Image (cartoon, rainbow, N blue to C red; front, side):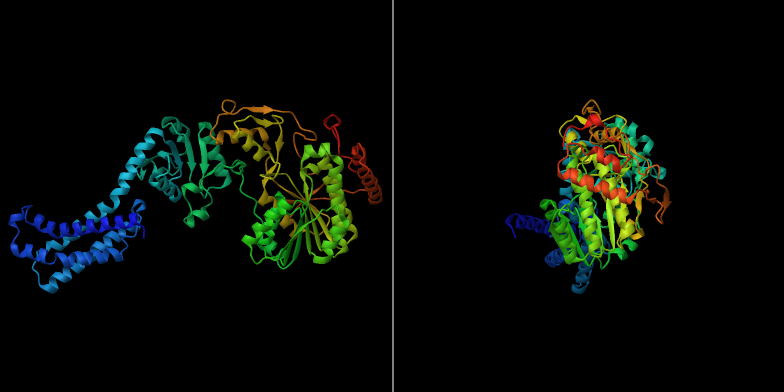
Length: 618
């Protein structure tokens, strides 16, 4: 035990001795009208003779009720209950001792003894917290962040309590917003509930609010979007709490507050899939994921690892990414049978050796070059990796008895204007061709942009805002479909369940989002004003980029699956023999480092319309 702690406990013990002594005499002093001389000697003698025993009993009881072990700076309801219970027990033992020793005392003595002892003990234990809180509020009034809380429920109360009691918080809560009209005008820990969401803008201006905290962990995406849209009008920084499960687990705290993510602005709840069917699909299966260290590939590995596969094989060419996902899964799933291999999907012998040795039941092919502008200036590399990497991986799969092969595709494969999209369209044609001639079931899963993935626009915007701007947007009218990485991967897994072979699965991702709106929202939600604090600059469309993405080609039909948000595009008919000849010509061209492979690609993908003025090299 350190010296400082020993001193603190010694002070508490001395104070408690004094409290017991005062509580032993004060009831008689009060009983006889505050005149010590009028107290009968027989009663006064009883109190003084029992004093030593009373002190010893009290100290033992206080110790048993942990009144010397609690951190009183953070005392709450539990500590208050311990004080009351300890004082009540001391009073009972006082009564028993007096009666046993036949010490005469007035009947009112015991009631007043309990009341006075409880009052003194409570005041002594909670005084430090009260003084510290008052000092904290006084300091924050001068230079603290003025805060509005949205949500007068359990989560809101927890946040208010932590902010109020924390010695490190510089926040001052000015008001509370809640849509429940029965709470309006009432108070939580001395802070008034001023009204519903229609009062947010008005109260933010009236109280000079700097930051708004949405403390409604159970709010769905639609509610969050409505609240965020209102809060954006205030120019206040906006933060929210995590999910309700953390509130149930008692994990909610100020440290758990997070900045509002763009996911909160999409206006829809996360895509739900049939987890039970996915579990049965991959359970006890050997699953291989190419590109397993990338944004999509690593999330595939996480979700597959949680569904009890027989073995998970992670293949990636980039060792740093492979190492990171390996270490993560080792920690989260210590009993997972996992194999991590460094390999290129371009290497025919390597991919065949891997599949021959491990004999996977399912292959998820996520390995690909995906960055549109970079692929525009290095088209040969895009074709080598995406097209022929897929071809070689698919060939290895059929030679080694893989049951299902799932290609990760993209909405950019629809009427492509860039090399990356065109290469993915050729990949879809390859797997459709292979599905017709081999026992392996080949399918593709096509989706739009994923939030937070490597090279996506959101991390770029956040870095630009952190640097003070400007935020760069290619075009004021550019729009994109968005989904989260876990949603995209859940779709991929669900598609594997539905797959019969040859399908292109498409996710209904709702309404497209303007990139300019995302940029403005991120700036506002970071506490800045658009074009005042952080400017937005338009840089022009990048090589291969178009204003909007399509999920289906015009000639593709659309049929539903059991999940209403997952659809199947009808395979497009094409001449297979001609396709193989075209692929062979393309292969020879890229291996010879042809200066312009775009005409060859257009022969294979007639819907590919490159913008000739937007590329400048290989």
